[in-house]
Length: 529
Image 1 (tube, one colour):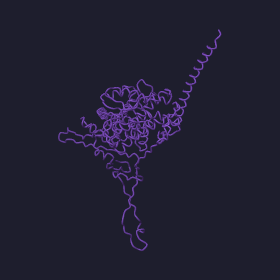
Image 2 (cartoon, helix red, strand yellow; image 1 turned 180 degrees about the vertical axis):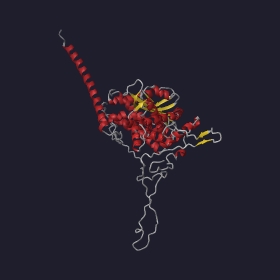
Image 3 (cartoon, helix red, strand yellow; image 1 turned 30 degrees about the vertical axis):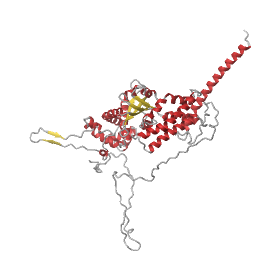
Image 4 (cartoon, helix red, strand yellow; image 1 turned 135 degrees about the vertical axis):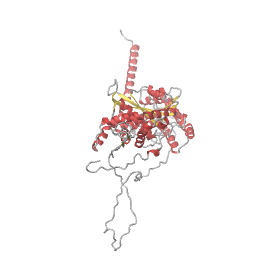
């Protein structure tokens, strides 16, 4: 069958269109792979900070690879206006800071010899002043015995009555550990990120035999004692109308019906008034959407979180507003801006978001009232957000959706309402960085101790992490608080007594002597006593 010239031309046109589409698809794939390669190289060899991606003065142009060039009007081609922003920053004082006067000390007196106390003229020198300097010394892992001597009495008349003085109630019955030792072990692992095997080695070097299994058992039993405090903190978070949430991965070796290599998760929930912030860590084997819904079952208000679908679903409830994070939205555009030196759409969006942060920084520096924050955002931040929205809407028509810039556009536009929710209340934040900073200590600790052995250890870790981070949020010294609470928690019988032990309710004066050394009895050289 002979094809006519018209049919041949039509077939060639169809084949040409197919090849052009194939080339366009491959170009898009190459572009995405080049972008990923650039991100990997930047992550491996580049600096981690996102600062300096966009200069302070920037000429905004639409010459991004993905955006069609447009002819400028005479007004647009006129000389660009630049704005110079200056601000002052207080510099911390340098030099050695004085040592705390609460530290115990020893005195070493240095005097002249008798010959040096006489002048060359023959007169005796007169003491006029003492020059005092201080140094800091330490005895590693200061440990001492607590010897309980229980007085026993008997009746010589009837020879039947025998009475023995009771031991003070201990956190763990019949355990070697005092509240101070338990507090030290907990603080070392969950505040200073020292794994138990290192603590075991420290005890061994001091000639004390305490196994890793014993240390682990102490942590689990201590966490069981402190669970009521965590439950009260959960209620306090739900009673306030602003909260934060985040999550990170965790490895637990022995979980029921799960392989040791499967990822588990540590969830973070933070809330309460600014002067009574509570931090809750929760271990869960999965990342299911039901977890934040269960935690915030009685919550009404605003939840700061990233745009993981669990939080998006949470924000769809009538009584909860999801406040999305501008830092996350910015990160997508920063990745594109790093890969393209030419100033384009990504650079422009990053610069506008930077202006939002500059407004927030000025408000914090001036310690603006909540009403002032709200009005400033309405008059200054909202116009910037409208500019960003206009740019994104216009670019969406020309940017391939599967490109890196298209992914940045899709993220911001999909969660646009949640990104704007910070405008609703002057107490709200522009981002979720508070929970990001709060979950970071757990991430640092995970790099040191790598994993939890089983579910009991993971749950105990979540309880102890919750209390330590709550102490840090409220500027309470963690070791002193742990020692005091472990000493008194078994005597707390009522809800009010338990509430008084919470880090943000406790009287700081009760903690002043927790680090004081008792009067020690030094053993004689032959080891007696």
